[in-house]
Every structure is written in structure tokens, then in C-alpha cells.
Length: 164
Image (tube, rainbow, N blue to C red):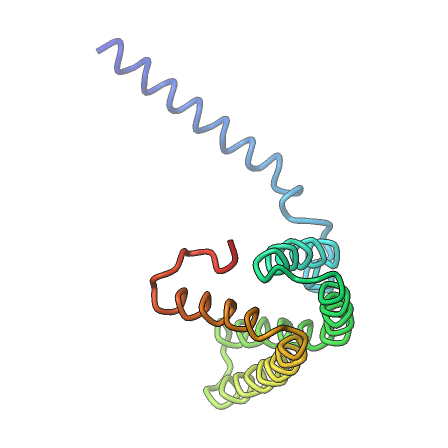
């Protein structure tokens, strides 16, 4: 009986301490208070991710130095030119979510959904243009290797990660 009371007290104190820690650190999690006015895209993180995947892709296709330079410059250019479109897409998606949570009419929600879809479609068109430009820089055996990897991944026969 005494042991149960001791365990219950320890759990209660630990829980209370956890709640106080959460409340004390919440402002750190909340960011700098600018909320939705902050840019949606962290440029440094975006660049780090792109460089990581580029390195894996280049190693996978055994890219030449010339291919690496050309593809990198193409992606640099495309990343900068498409950033406003990606910002708009995220902004529109947030607005759609807020409409869904509020008292907006079905028609308003459908109109916003169409705006989100249009923004996404424009961005996907840009991505396809970039993919086609990269494709022209690859040798036939490199294109085949990428295709085989994608087919394997889509059919469930590949690993969870696309580029090993």
C-alpha cells in the first residue's frame, strides 16, 4: 500500500514537472511571434536538402563533372524562379485550411480549392520542364538506370528510399 502511494506520488510529480517544462519552453517552440507573416521557405534548409539529394543522384548515375555543373546550374536557376510559386501555393493551401475550419460556404471552399489546384499545376508544369531539361543532359544508360529505379520503387520491389 505504501509502495503504491509512493509510485503514484512519483508519477504525479513527474507529470507536473513535465507540464511546467512544457509551459516554460512553449515560447521557444512558438518561434519569433511573426506567425504567418514569416516566409514559408527556409532557404538554407532548402539548399541543404537539394545538395544532399543532388549528391545522391549524381553518385547514382555516375555523373560527369560537366553533367554535375550543368544540372546544378539548371536547378539553381529553377529553384530561384519557382520560389514565389511555391510560396503562393503554400499560402493558398493555408487559406483553404482556414476556410475549412471557419464558416465559409461550400462555394468559397471550392473556389479556393481550384486556386490551390491551379497553383499546384503551374508548379508541376515547371517541374516537368526542368525534368525534361535534365533528361537531355543524361546519357541513355543513365536515363535507363533512373527509369529502372523509379519503376522498381513504384512497383514496390525497390527500397523505400529512391536513391541509395
